[in-house]
Amino acid sequence: MAEVRLTAEGVAKYEERLEYLKTTARTEIAEQIKIARSFGDLSENAEYDAAKIEQARIEYEIVEIESMLKNVILIDEENIDTEIVNVGATVTVKNADTDQEMTFQIVGSAESNPREQRISNESPVGAGLLGHKLGETVDIQTPGGLTRLRILRIQ
Image (cartoon, rainbow, N blue to C red; front, side, top):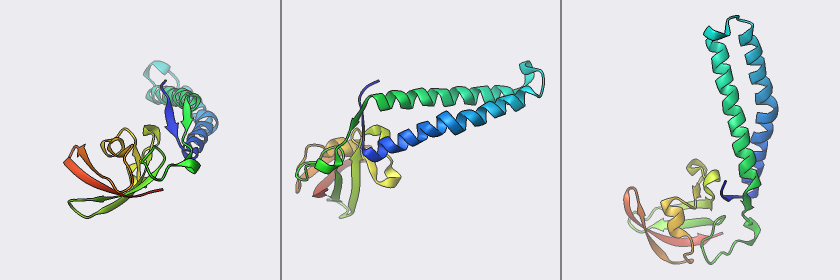
């Protein structure tokens, strides 16, 4: 697996999810399989088949998260350069066409969540802003067309 960039908060969330999957989820699915087996003939037991599929999904997610955590590059949020946009920075930009201001944190793709104003460094806007300086206006090609963003703040 390739390098995965995460903040300390992102690492904690994935570690919490992993702990849940290894303990609670595994226990719950084992109980569901036990109950489904009690229904009898496994060759025509939809509950058993569904539980086994869910068990496989849980085990796959465990392997994926463990692999990700082994390849993590921790984003040092304490030492963010506030003159240049980097991964981990919280950036405030102003759309030159609409005068709308937006603030978001640029994070690794595994941690992105637009609802929480966390965009991926691989997204058009995230990638387009990386390396640019405070005060610059950047033209970014997005799925909706060309967008001009002025960098107002880097935190």
